[in-house]
Image 1: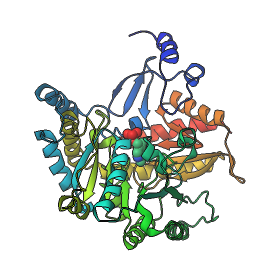
Image 2: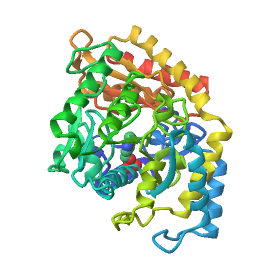
Image 3: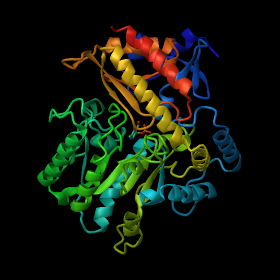
Length: 451
Ligand code: PLP
């Protein structure tokens, strides 16, 4: 392998990174990751740290999950690719659809449409939602509602339902008819409400209000993450998602759960919807479905929606949508192995226990570091610290200071992720108590640099 300086120099001159200013790679060269084992990654300088990011919220089972690696290799040898467009299928994808049907049965989801990742899954769900209404003779239902601070990906459809200007402004105009309502974000919200339950009621009222303003008959779907992830880990009050379900059902609006992060154990439940006791009409998955080892995703579809398509006699139900890699046999084999490992290891139990430990540890850090404005978590292994320049005024923190926290935490033994003013933690779900302590003490060291 070339040395560190050579790689960093060539990285800067020939590679653009997602979600990064192109000039940034020169000013702040990236860490060159050369290996990973268990829940740790190693860089080109031989520094080994606990991965507090879990790849990108996706390496739930860690980096050494041999059954998944074996399944990928075996499927590569047997059938490395064939499409499942009309006329062909393969045994791996059929078995996966059946097993996902069992896995998601408590969520009421019984059909799978396969994709190559999270943005693809969101795009698919939005398109199927419009088609569903057209099949039923309600062609006017074309709009989408979502939450401010929600993140749904980068395709034009997904970006149009995103609730953060950073992912929208440079690419506008986006899809017409997409509107966002306030998120149940207790630390900052337009209602100045800090009580989570009352805040949930305000946000639900805002949803009702927006539906009335737009006209219920114009809205195809409401899309939300059961716990907002990239927007800064925002868990709503337990009444919120059931309230959204009720409002959507009342107005004939489909509820799309974006479970790209929350499915497969991250919240301490098998899925984010089950965490809140809600049955969605469609659910978008990706990321941990293959433990990050292969780009793959699935939209799971509720029985009633599926029946609407399958029983249609109008000719409007043919699906004019799909990807070359929909149902990729290697992705399907990887997903089958992941599902089986996720169930065998009962990962939500560890996610809940280690998540509780991490949340408690972060609250203790807040007592020691005035720079921590808000601590969010308490639902499995999704936690965030919102850093501020001034706790009393909640003034934003200087960007360089938060970069420094990350850098020092890395030197002290943990990779953590910075997103805006937030430090986000989403480690593999198989880490142990000592790994959580390593992340917490590394953060402690990082935070001490900004006092
Ligand atoms: N939806 C959610 C909730 C996500 O967190 C993400 C990515 O982080 C996406 C969709 C987009 O997924 P991808 O990056 O695989 O396209």
